[in-house]
Image 1 (tube, rainbow, N blue to C red):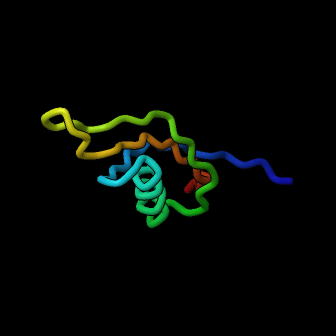
Image 2 (cartoon, rainbow, N blue to C red):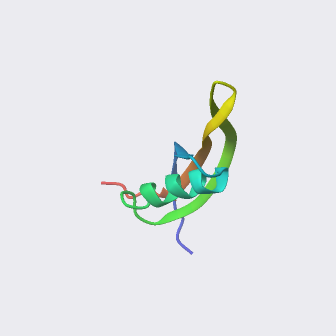
Length: 70
């Protein structure tokens, strides 16, 4: 098996519906650019509040993909 190197980027996805949708939005958007996504790890969940009400769910997601050197 050949050795590989993976790069990790951190993204924040948002949703008005749920943390799950926020994480899904981050992963689906990221999958349009880097190739060979491998792992997505939710590292933090929070909410945006306005006047004491939840208006958005946010998921911080660390995504790894296979590094393609030049």
